[in-house]
Length: 319
Image (cartoon, rainbow, N blue to C red; front, top):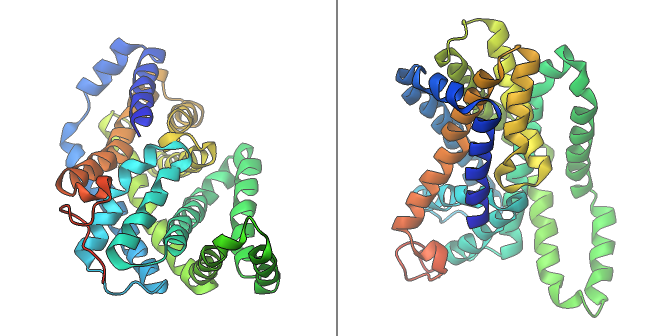
């Protein structure tokens, strides 16, 4: 995670320098900071709905004895893990979940996978009108949507999965992981069924719309006039750049997201580079870095999350 934080600092500096540091500083100084609490509330709205989705997924894999407080601690504690390559560090949440509830590690990983897939489908859904308005983004949109839907569809093909798993269980190298592979498949199949997926994606669309509104408020705070066009572009840019960041597999989508936001605002709203850069920095502080900060606060009060010591202030020992 340290590498991700270092990369984040470099990206922030690069964005500011590329667009003229003095002008960016002037834009930030002139920003309507009275909007900042409302922007952060929009981000918290996003986190809250995504937490309910996480807790709903836990129930689907059989974790029903975890309190909302403990569930929220694990969920928010995972935010800093977003700044690991490909967000692979989020798999640590499966370890925490295992320590807290006894849930199999493989099933915990399926919750993280289902979160990512449903978020991806949700932001693609929010991007649809933008892609229709700006067809240049259609090829990337279609490719990513096809890939995500393919994963969902394949997870439901029991007739293909079970023979493959039985074969793998007989192989010398894979046999000892047989139970984990079955747990992973069963968890994935359960979470990606049509009804849970539809509910999760619907929650995700509303949740990510909250961050789209935050993006719009950032534009207003920088002096852009209110209107449906900047609102629509703000939602599209926030959504599509989130997809780009996820596909990039860079820690937290760093650089990929920033480049997408600044570039799309310059192209679609004809914003001067310093204004686009200022909007980029503000929304990333209000979303990614705000979340990382909340997660680090959870770590500070729950050292057991990092040491993996169930007796240290954080993770109750499951019975």
